[in-house]
Length: 102
Image (cartoon, rainbow, N blue to C red; front, side):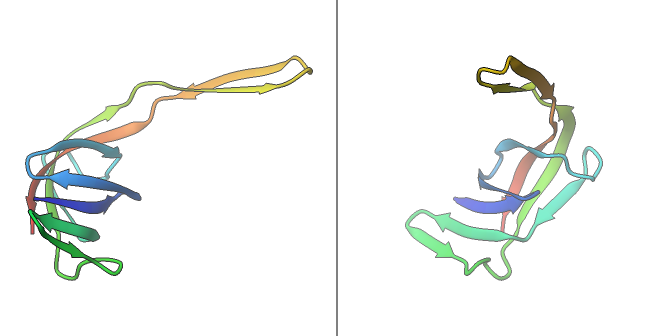
């Protein structure tokens, strides 16, 4: 069984007991969260598609930890002018574990 759910502005394909990294959530570590924007739910050959969301469906998850991701480098260059600029950042992420798809 899997579902496609929107978490923090992005869509993820999730299954039970799966661990994923999402954009930083404001809840504390160890807290339970529920996501109500389920767009698709599939159980074997039984597929339910929402328009745009499935009414009454939700995904339960638990926050494991908050981390900073790997460094993302941004390089800007303009041809024939000698202009180069290197910049980078480390995104703030939250690791969650999917507990149940209802």
